[in-house]
Image (cartoon, rainbow, N blue to C red; front, side, top):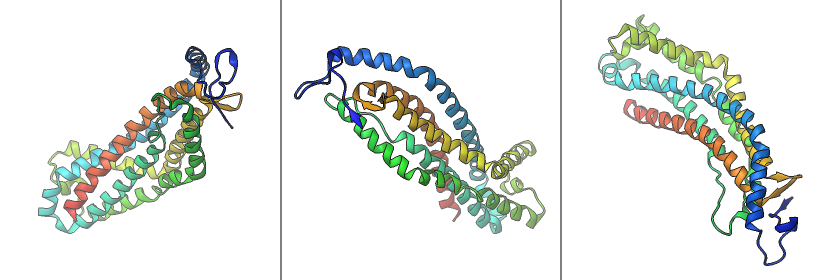
Length: 266
């Protein structure tokens, strides 16, 4: 159930009346102080989860950069493995796409603070929150769909290497044993992510759920949504959005670069 901001003296504004601005600011400040302590722990947990997922995307970004750098050498000297490299890139691209879309659950909503709109914001968020609760499994399933991708990536890499009895990265003409070893370690971490995929899924799902539930809680006073809680809820959402936006940007940028390389390979 929703309720607007209370006027001066704690009374609800009557017909045609607007909320007292001084009371609005005072109550918002008190509400912000009340929620800050709780939100700090949740924010730290979300930041840790996002950092873990970002690390996996950064590995993929480095792997893509090496593939792009050695693409011409590969096409010239080992054209027979180009199809498998492309298939591997497709799986990497799917991983990045799923993470970017899941992050959008948090980044897509923003409170409107334009004059006259503040009273409508609890209703707007409530509609978004209900839609999330109804469809949140879609975002989680996107991430769960990554399960198996790492095995596909590994199988293609092993197929390429075993056919010529050479290391995977030697096909790209990098001419650096040290860099080949570093990239091999990154690729191995991508493989290993399969073993930890349940943890990645749990981290992302938990972070999305905690963030949106916490913003919803910030709008409530005694179980009712109040317009005068919007500034505190918006501040909290902005904190969470920044972490998810960085992950979304990293994943989307890596996905787009992989798509570009795929177009050149196919």
